[in-house]
Image 1 (cartoon, rainbow, N blue to C red):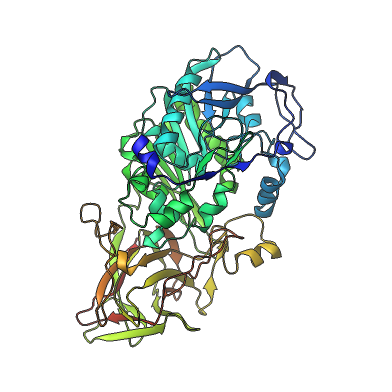
Image 2: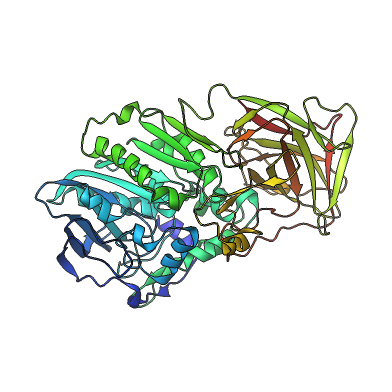
Length: 579
């Protein structure tokens, strides 16, 4: 651990602003039924015992401070943990309120006691659970330096779970729950196998900081990382905060020890797992499905929804579903949870006819068959048979038209459900590298692009914010990306369905060199009706734009022209999972 820390890059933490925090007294107090954190938030439905800023000592002597909310009862209860560095006292600050309001979650839907992206104590205490909101290492008043993703957080999470299990009010069982950071931290903590961790419920969380966050497709992109690091604040003198964005710029290869420490090991998870995923989250989808595949078979479940993670997490139906899972494994209630289908997936049609909750034993369903659609450079069609003659398509990587596309038309109603991928033979003219972005769009019978908001609020402002970015909020279809110099495949981890790149070397292109590349695309589930089309777009720029509004889009390393070779000896194709 000490050797790893020497390789990490640190900066000073930002200053915590205490005027944002809730006005709840330090120590132990009782919030009476009907209490409101402030006007506009939901009144709490029951008395809640609050223990604020409870010190918890980690194995190395560092003290973290946690808030515990629990029912006003003498009964022993299980505890849900919301693990993230976002600050346990900032739940009602203007930034979070405006963010939730933007997507369509009004203040009145929540009590304001919940940690950002975490479980609301108002609901869970009313149903016989405690909720623990920790300030992780270095955050607010917690001691130590701030770390982001990896073994430091995993070990601290282990220590907190074991401390909570020993408390007099606890029944000895703890669980982790939440979305985004509160989800991906679960892969790391659960892989440490804390004895009293009874279950986890990650909803939408990356599982590899290199591949999912700072260098998707081997293309360095630290804009979103810089944005979330703003939340690393300390109340006293500034502490050292790990600068993952700077590490992304300094360490370009995935085999560096810093990045190896930030790869989750879900194959080591032994407790029951209820994973929630979507096809549309450009930050979390790949990591969530990768972790799901790696978790050992047995007590694991997957639900794939058709929305954005926050409205899904706070929808009453899904909260009840989550409680059924926790009631079974944390309270021992025989409520039929284990008869829940192992997989419940969704199909998007982008026309108001999405289907959700489709049961299956596996993902993708066993009926899925992978089929290659070959690129024809002359007609720009996707065809069932590879063209006999060579052809190519060229676009100027620096010009006004930085893309080429290919069309497939469905003869009958067709379901595509699983993992698409693209194989291309490519050549760079005037440069020694290429950043290649691929997108798969659905078109209606008239050739119009179909897309959908995955948030409840469809106001004009949200149209503005997502027209050229905000890809997490509006879904246009499966995407993928690859820097061609990073094309080397890991033969042990790659499959014919899902290519896995080693990202441990740079292999620049020579003039006139034509090389094959494989690009993994986001898993998808879509319905095509007769006469509708799929359009495969190959581009020198990211057509989806930035992940969240306000984040700078990544700037590709492209010059000259890109050439896509098709047919003859060049088996360029789109592989699709047809059901």
